[in-house]
Image (cartoon, rainbow, N blue to C red; front, side):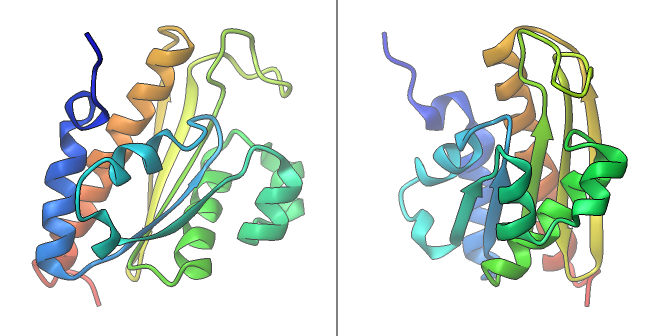
Length: 171
């Protein structure tokens, strides 16, 4: 039996409907999820109405050059950190001219990251006109589960941000 992405990530359909109704757009900057968030969102028919674009930014120079993440920030906090996830989200929002930008960075596993950070440590951020909110995940359930958990969390954070914008709680 083949599992469809829209079945594996039902939140993607709900988020897509909300974005479409509210005339909002989203852009992604993914590291450890390797495009899984973008794949989940684009699996929903009609996604072109709200998806602006995205980048898989595994390497630090891609984070810096394509998303505007400060090299000082990367050196000070490491690629797997809340400040870098937040900068990635803001960079995706800015680069793709979207209402929401999502940044995901972490260690999918199974091995610890090059910075000595444990597998399962992931930071997710969502940027909007009102600022950036981030979340830390730290539970190693294996590479694929770590990636899926990060995408589920990112979809949830995007929905919260979109609901705030739709309710007029943001500029």
